[in-house]
Length: 296
Image 1 (cartoon, rainbow, N blue to C red):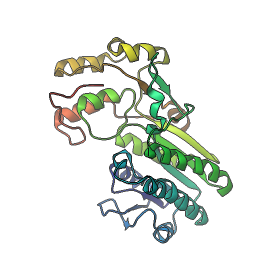
Image 2 (tube, rainbow, N blue to C red):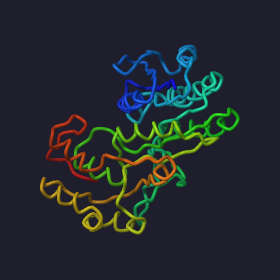
Image 3 (cartoon, rainbow, N blue to C red):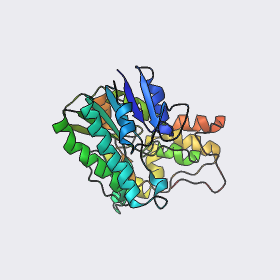
Image 4 (tube, one colour):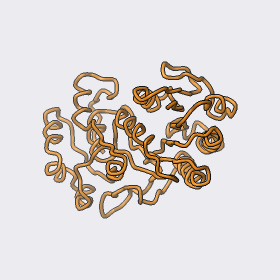
């Protein structure tokens, strides 16, 4: 099956394109040239999209404006790229006979849901989003449109809300991997599996690293995470102690990906220990630790 992946000049799009190349022909589209991009075109260019969709059986739509663009790009640009272009791509894909559409979304749209004085938020697909920025709002608007469009188009749409996944200091990244972070390679695996999810309509899944925490831990996680970490993740506690890294002072949310594991058969493979190994090896996916770095 020929697959169109948008946004392949970005880290996540590139990882997805690389993963899907094992399964068949993949066409990468981005407005920036890159080793992973076959078609250089803007995601808002309908003519370019129509041409790129020829012979395609499935679409993975990753291209978007993201959190770093807030304040740099106007609200209208977010609407055009994150919502308008998604609508255009999905419509053209349906017209071209595409029946599988995977949309890369974000757990960031849960926004203020993490602010609970009584304990950490336990966040899954049934948690109501509380967008705070135009980025969050635009991604949620695109999701809503796809939810309405899929049944009428005869298209199976899968929305993957991926959690934090970008280079940052190792203590932060390693701790986040337990409750609100995920590896790009695991994100790519989730997209590959989602292409086989042929359930009609639109289904959404949280994609985040496997958590050792339980819902009963949420009160302690917010106010005394060290106690929970000693109980649930002693290997992380020991690894942090050996390196002189501080444990998180508070954990305000846990993203739960159990539905993706049960329904899609997805299993995250890269946990906090991989982050630490990357840091020790000086890998560029981890930002070097500075004296001022701490977990929050």
